[in-house]
Amino acid sequence: MTNKVRKIVVIGANGMLAQKVIEAADSAAKVICLDLPEFDITDRVAVLHTIEELCPDVIINCAAYTQVDKCETEEALAFRVNGEGPGFLAEAAKECDAVLVHISTDYVFAGDSGTPYREDDPVGPLSVYGRSKLKGERAIIASGLLRYFILRTSWLYGPGGPNFVETVLRLAAEREELRIVSDQIGSPTYTGDLARAIFALLQKSDDGRGSIYGIYHFSGDGACSWYDFASVIVARAQAAGIPLRVKTITPITTADYPLPAIRPAYSVFNKSKYQTAVAANIPQWQQSLQIYLDERQAII
Ligand SMILES: NC(=O)c1ccc[n+]([C@@H]2O[C@H](COP(=O)([O-])OP(=O)(O)OC[C@H]3O[C@@H](n4cnc5c(N)ncnc54)[C@H](OP(=O)(O)O)[C@@H]3O)[C@@H](O)[C@H]2O)c1
Image 1 (tube, rainbow, N blue to C red):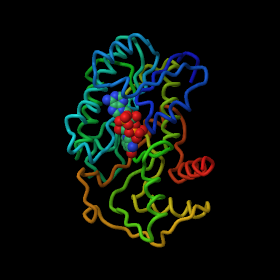
Image 2: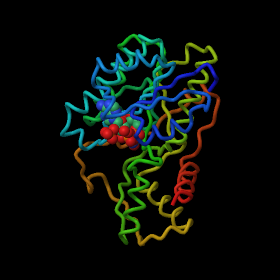
Image 3: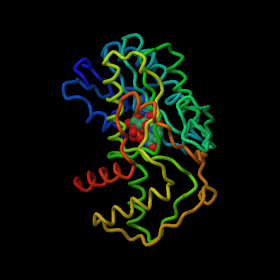
């Protein structure tokens, strides 16, 4: 990022993605962290007031109601946080002429496509979470803010959050058999890669390429099922000497493991818009998983 970006407000700053966003920010930038309970994106007046006072160059919204299954029973809250909050942030960004970066999800799609989803493909969320996140995207677009990035991502994991990698490692340490869904296909995304993607896009926008704003798809490169992902996690963890009890990983279907929220069966992204915009390669998901596991081992 160039020195043009002087003040960055990170919202949802205690969350999993925010941790890597804060780490990836240019050391010359002033990073201001906001999260609950002091800062609530559903409080429009407080959002407008706080952002106006801070007058940032960039707002990065990592805040969301991310418990996908709980959204089914907490619909009103999910829609306030994921659907309305981003609109308030866009309004505030417009007032102070800041760039807004917002994170959305593969769950805005129905998952019935046979080919990787492009940014302008028809949406069709299957869950409250997906519908609420789609409403958030639309609120930003409807605000009239011109300088925004909406990055849709998928299967996110990284330090500091409950995530699939941690769940698999925990269960694999406790049990001899894991049963993992093999009929949902997507792309795991390491928070470190997404954080770098955010700053890569911001850097390009600093270069004066005004037309770069809009919706982008970003995930780790490649595709797999949750079963494939779990198998690689376990194999890599065993190779790294992490003690595990697991002996068998059994592929099961979505129907064998019913959950309150329906997930898309296929949510692989076409990422060529991002790749063209920043002229950078996206790391393979297996490569990034190894980086995460190494990072995790270094901490333990
Ligand atoms: N995790 C995934 O697999 C995944 C996949 C695709 C897209 N995404 C998107 O990626 C983004 C980052 O996800 P993440 O997993 O890093 O999220 P996360 O760890 O759950 O962090 C979200 C943060 O937002 C805060 N927050 C919740 N409601 C808020 C409110 N009303 N006002 C201010 N802050 C609030 C949370 O605080 P509390 O903890 O106190 O509630 C938490 O600190 C989200 O937009 C998510 O929808 C995630």
